[in-house]
Length: 563
RNA sequence: GCGCCUGUAGCUCAGCUGGAUAGAGCGCUGCCCUCCGAAGGCAGAGGCCGGGGGUUCGAAUCCCUUCGGGCGCGCCA
Image (tube, rainbow, N blue to C red):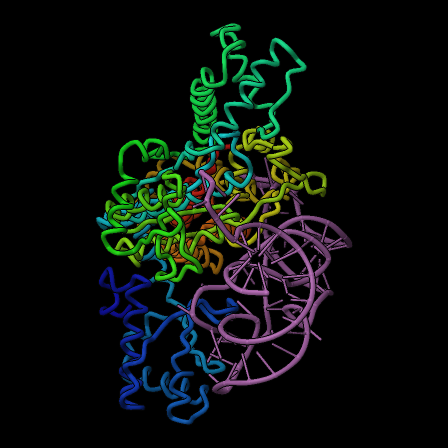
């Protein structure tokens, strides 16, 4: 073996690629002076026989030097082989095909990568704290009814992003805003009062404007069992504050309960009403006025949103003096922007038109690049291949709680992040609750359970030794190297998910890891007679189990030992 | 009318900053358990990437246009 490449870290895939990039730039400089400044990027080739990585550096050059890409690629590779033979030994395959330079890492590099994963243990894929503070708001709902499917989606996406941010070293603060101000709260109170009266008089009508869902009945019953008929004959002005608060608190408590059950946690449940009471709304409005970003018209105060790419100016104080929802949101975002390096809002599909306004707010407050707004598209429920329609106004709602009852937390969390947030989601309830191989959740969990089973069958001494395996060079099978390569992707995948708000890639990656493992499992007998090979394969299982456990945890799904 | 999202295999969807013969799961047709968990593996059929233009060495991806689906355009929250 070549002495220059036996020194530990230069074996690692990243180091090998960096060395190749340097060597390639030297070759470019020698053959086509001046061209070495262009970046050398690596991508995953389309087909496995092309190797582990490919670079398209020759394409950009081809245009410059008016030569066919394939000829450029061939020339570069010949030059590189001539002058950088050491670097070439880090690769078991180096080819110029169709203009691409295709690379396959030497097995030693993958062994070094695996050794690194084993020493990282369950921390593999994490990153050190980077000091950056992120505020993540998601789920937020009106406290007028139970959480429904779309909140299942926004909370699943938000919680998974939050957990990945944290795993990658960010300081994360998650928040939920309770929209407990405004006329809707009186509607809630009147609806609740009607439900209360119905306990004594079943003919008592719901008000014209109401939340007709039956979810208010148990709350009304609690009032009745506490206070009896106390409120029946009182005037509205007497009971309204009580029923508002009782209804609001009862529903928020239920929403918190569902979140807890769903594995979703918020560091702050921010009440809109409190925001007003604290004076922050007034202060922020004053600040905007100081900056000359407001004007009065017909007794109302407008925010000059059009100066910040919104399509019209927006009222923040109504002509009767009451602040609008936007005024509250400006104050809330000002607060978040000041205490965070980045602010992310994950909103439902009915908030499209609100993005420009929020971005305008951030810019007006002096933080033009700190806010990201992510929209999760709508969710439709499928039952027996039929769309289940829902309407909150008609009272025909299916609470998130019921869906969790039916399919379980694991399947629900996985299904909700499985699609790109921008794609409308058809949630197939029957598929999600099916405990079969049709269900992608079980496929991944099965991979984890299968590994656990292997460890139950293995000799304890072997397992101990696997954690610091010295025999990794025995891993030479294509399925083994492919699996290591897949595991190795984890850190960069997580950063990619964060950079592009693409949590669905976590679900797809989980499936890919499981798939590569199952293939390895069926092609390579783990508990073989040869001890060194056996220990090396157990080491690979150890790393795979760790990655599956990490990915499932980040997705909010359990990683079972048996199923 | 304006704005945002969306249209890829029979179905549900991937396709990251434009890159090689467009991928996966389900479904369909075969095959593989004397062997660590078959909730698994292997192979096959199935696509003018909604239509039409353009940009360039190269487009599912970028631009324009057109058609279909969803959602927004309040002194509601």
